[in-house]
Image (cartoon, rainbow, N blue to C red; front, side, top):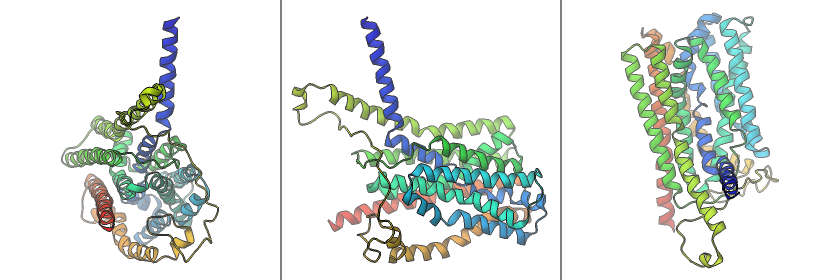
Length: 409
């Protein structure tokens, strides 16, 4: 009887920890990293643009028009932002997943000839819808994580956006493992893979009660080191693949290592949440006499709670009286602020040249007579450098912000 009771208690504890783990904020961070690691399909346009051009008989002008609508969809995020203000994050992520699959799946059908050749405006519409899914994933994940970690927002943004930059190299490795060198199938992959990942974690990404941990910054730095290891491995593999012709099995082996490194943060998350859960159980089972002690071996954090993300006055509340920097703005407060104008102008004039270069890497490589493997290498290396720039800017900005705040105090 005692043995049955012991087994029942063990199963209850495991069930309790499983629920705690899946609902925890650090597991939400892990889910967010995975979603972001699949959200950079727009950076892969140069890999399959030649297939679109040759399959549909487009000239360079038409291809540039298609590229423009791809960039339009991938960078105009106001629609997803408005929707995120009045719905929970899972709605934004679901809409993005549906748009991603629909847009790229229709492009894939057109490229392989399964449907009649669409008019140019339809192709522009399809790729614009598919690329717009990136803004929905970014909004649903980034805004939610910033709300859950308001005191580490620069680090959170840098890490998550870094994974968006790295996603091009990650997806390229998976594409070679799944489909070899069939470029047309790359369009299919970026249609279904990000959709599946987002749908799997729909209810994981949510706004929780803010509760800063003492070792929060240390955990983010550990996640940074894991991501640096992932980026370093992919860069080495890219260089080797450019020198040596890989077989399908070797591509699969490198993809397996990429997946292992991609899921490595789960070990860190498991360890951290298991420690928090043990502390919580210890406090619950301590006697009142033990609770009198002022110092405990571990600091117990309350269970994260999902909170409402809806704001009753998001439109016209104090439009021209914004709160101090760092606080939440309403939509119109943000639009009419000087900071928004500066950021909008900087982004408008600073991003376009980079996007043009990324979109035309395939055409540049072809014009210079480079083989397709070299073009893939260019895109993957650019993805890694993109990751490094985003991560460094996020972490450095947070360091400057913390130092400035300490000086002001």
